[in-house]
Image (tube, rainbow, N blue to C red):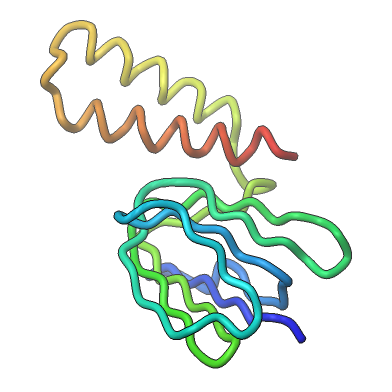
Length: 130
């Protein structure tokens, strides 16, 4: 038995497939979902979702807020922005991180720079697994 995974952003279906395990970070902490998991709804925070595939591989996905809903061996992840690890432009993420760090050096209370740095760090973390 496996889980059916659907990860959807406003623009497109980012990922869909079957998995043995999904690990996501919610506002209450990290949680793993396996077949037979009880129904669950939670707020996703900016982090890397890891999907353990039945062939032993792992799909890493950078998500930037949203919701996760689990029922009947189906995991739906609804995200504002989501990127598969292999689709991440590493050089662009590094440049975004450096720019955000520079902005924070000038104004440590710049909430937009804090958010930009966090998004870049999540992208780099997801891409590091490939």
